[in-house]
Each structure stands twice: as structure tokens, then as C-alpha cells.
Length: 352
Image (tube, rainbow, N blue to C red):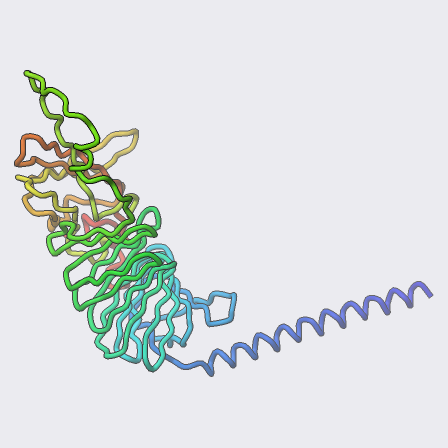
């Protein structure tokens, strides 16, 4: 009797498992059919390394290849040292760099991109609006080219190279034009002009008494016969690119770019680039006095794979102002090359 009971129990358990897995297989096939019935809105025009796609309502990521279609409401993710170019049916181009994730929704009246992380750029020629959402921030535009990346402390960096755009946060709203940059966080929107000089800043401020009220409130004091020397104004250079701990893939780049915020009344900037070696050693590979707020290294033979530190200081026209040195660290990488150039292993060999 016990033997028969045990056999019945085993048969019951196996039957339950067969039913369960059959149901899961049916559900997966049904969802796959629903996914294939979803509207195709674009293709992967070009890519490098590993790209994953997650259809709407699914939890499993699937690897995709070049020329594969993109469905509406798809989430696309690039891996380490990967990038992809997506061309949508309305002609919009979306470029994704490494470790980037977006969700794409295309309708008759608008294109909505949920920008989760990483760095993207878009080229668009359409009468319909483009809405890019990043956390609680929204960027709206029509025709034009724009790039975005998430910086340190959840700051959103925006560079508009063509067209007009509107930036909205729960507290502020600002319009930017072509060749303007913006740094957006939860408390402020900082706009930079064509020369990267700040032209506007929005942030909450407390009301303070006017200078006349301060004078009336405090009695005048006798002026000393010997005046104390004025304290020098210290300004620290603001470095924009490469940012801290950035990883730059030099496989297809023709130059290494450096950008920083322009400081008014500056004679020149001092740019230094060090390559970091083992055991704390370092090698100075570039020292340059620059008058602009940008510099390009076109001789890539001086570069190699590894870690770097760049320093920026300056000389002010005012004797009362001191520009202190700022430092940022970044690394240079070289991803795998196409089959026609498999022997490339470093930027030095790449640009001989």
C-alpha cells in the first residue's frame, strides 16, 4: 500500500510540474506573439559590442544584432565599451554610448525618450515634438541636435548644438538656443553661452536687506589710518570634459578634447596632462598655455591605454584674482576593432 501511495504521489508531482512548465511556455509564446504584433518604429543601424533589448512588459533582456527592428516601448541598453545608433521611422537618429539605457515611445504627435542613464545624442528633423525625460526633468524640442549625459551628483548635462529647447523641472523652466550648454539638478538650472560663460542661473534665494538698510541699521565706524591689504579672490577652474572617472574609447576618435568653463578676464589657461604609471609614478606628456576654454590633442601618438590626470589653472588679468588648480582623472580605452584591423591593441599603434 505504501508503495502504491508513493507512486501516486510521484505521478501527481510530475503531472503538476508538467502542467506548470506548459503554462509558462504558453505564456512566453503568447507574450512573444504580442511583442511581434507591436509596431516597428526603427532599426539598429550600427552597433559595437553587446546591445540588449527588453520589450514592453517583459523582464528578460535579449541580445540584439545590427539591422534588427526596434519595437514601440522597447528599452535599449548598451554594455561596457559598447555603442549603438538607432534610426527611427520618422528619421530621428539616436546615438547611445556605453552603459546607457533608454526607453523609446513613438506616437503620431511626439517622440518620447525616457533617459535612464549614460550618454545619448539625437538628430531630429520633424514637426512633431521630442520629449526627453530624465528623472523629474523634461527637455522638449522639435528640429535640432542635442546631447545629454548624467554627471556627478545626478546632474544632467545638456549640449544643444542646433535648434531650440525648453528645460523643465518641478521648480524652474528655461529655454536654450543653439550652441548653449546647461547643467540641471533638482535645485537649479545653470546656462552656459557659446563661449561657455555662464549667462543665467536659476536657484532659490532668500530676501536680504538692501545696502541702504544695512547702513541705517549699523552706526558708522571711524576709518583706520592704515588700510589692511585686500584678500585675493580665489577662483577654481571648472572642468567640463573629460569628467571625473570618465572612460574614453579612442578607437574611432581623431582627437582627444578638453573643455572647461570660461573665466572672465583671464590672460591664459595652463593645461597639463599626466599619464599615471604603476607604484604612484606619473609622466607629464603635455603642458600647454591656452587662451581659449578648450583644447584638442590631435597627435594621438603621445597617448596610450591607461589612466590619466589633467590639471587646469590660469593667469588672471587682475592682480587681486588667483585661479587655483583643478584636477580630474579619466582613463583611455581601446575597444575591439572590426575584422579588417584585428591587430590594433593601443591608440599609439592605431594612429601611426
